[in-house]
Image 1 (cartoon, rainbow, N blue to C red):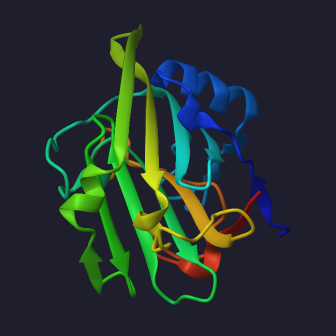
Image 2 (image 1 turned 180 degrees about the horizontal axis):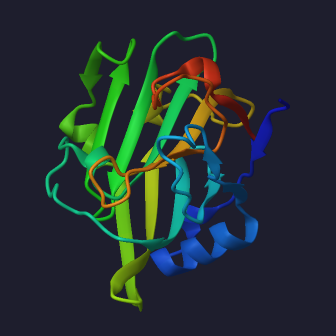
Length: 216
């Protein structure tokens, strides 16, 4: 597939998260996270989107999820957030074997690490983790007897968390990436992706199935 472009926007000039989110919705790259890769075992599809932009210093993400029965058991960073209502971003710098995962549950709790493969990983430092800003919103409504929730996650990820140096620019760089929605222990377990995955069983740790994104 051709590399999609992440637009450059001066998001840091805006004071409030709400203004930043408005700009992301209006001018960011919009992706639908809508691939149900294992329909026989995990057919659940939720409406999920992500808007993306950068300013050469940070990557800005805004996820929107509709109609989920929430699970939010993990309240501390580095917990098992993938078991909760969770959105994820995996990224690999061009030319590198290693990749990084950023997994956020509905509370904004974060798991992030540098991986050589699924089993070999080094957690990102607490300094890097604390530099990643997160903000979530939740809106409840009912369908029959079930409480469903629409929720959002806004995140600012400094380029250093991806392995870029402080004097490197993001503009012109190409990365491998995939975006996910999951919830292993929710009432309806699901494993949804932006770029399709060709494994037999659910597995997000597969850089060979990443799509390409170029920073404008």
